[in-house]
Amino acid sequence: MRKSFIVIGLGRFGLSVAKTLANLNCDILCMDISEECVRDAITEIPQCVIGDSTKLATLKEVGAGSIDHAVVAIGNNLAASILTTMNLKTLGVKKITVRADRPNYYQMYKMLGATSVIVPEEASAVSLANQIASDAILDYYSVDENYAMVKIAVGEKFEARSLVDLDLRNRFDVNIVGIIHNGQFYIPRGTDLLQANDIVVTVGTKLKIRKVDAFINQEAK
Figure (tube, one colour):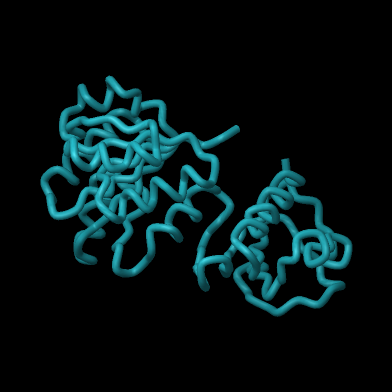
C-alpha cells in the first residue's frame, strides 16, 4: 500500500521534496498559498492546490487529516509554519516533518507536535524524501546523482538468515558494509546473520537500495 503525503510550501526545497516523492511512486498532494508557485509545480505534479494552510478549514477540505505524512516546507514565514504545524496536529496527522529555517527552532517545532524537524542547509530535499518514503529507512546519504549510503531497519518478524543465503550483492548489486546489532556496529562476513531489529548499512544505486528495503521488509511481513 502506497504512502500518502502532503507537501505544504512549494519553494525550491518543498518542490524538490515533492518531485522526489512523486518519482518514488508515492501518493502526493501539494499546497501553496501562492498561485505562481502552484502554477510552476503543477506541470510536474498534477495534484497541486492553492490554499492557506494556516486555516484549519482549508486543510480539512483537502483531506489532510487522512494523509500518512505531512511535510511543512514553508520558508521565511515563521508564523505560517507554526500555525500549519498546529493545524496538522489538530487534524491527527501522525507524521509531520517541518522545515526549520534555524537550528534553534528545533525544540519549538517538536513541542508543537512535529515528529521530525529538518534544517535544509543540513540535509538535502532529495535525501529527506527518500528517507520518509519508507518507514524502514533510518538515514540516507546521497553520494551522487545515482548512488547512496542508507541505513535500513530490519523488521521484528524477519527470520534470521546469513548474508550468503540472502545474496543481496548478486540479487540487487548492493553492498552490505555494516550491521548494527544490539546497538553495536560491525563489518560483517558472509556467514554472519542478519536478524530481526538489526540495522543494515548499504551502499548502491538509489533504485536498487529501495528494492533491498522492500525485499528485507517484505520477508518480515
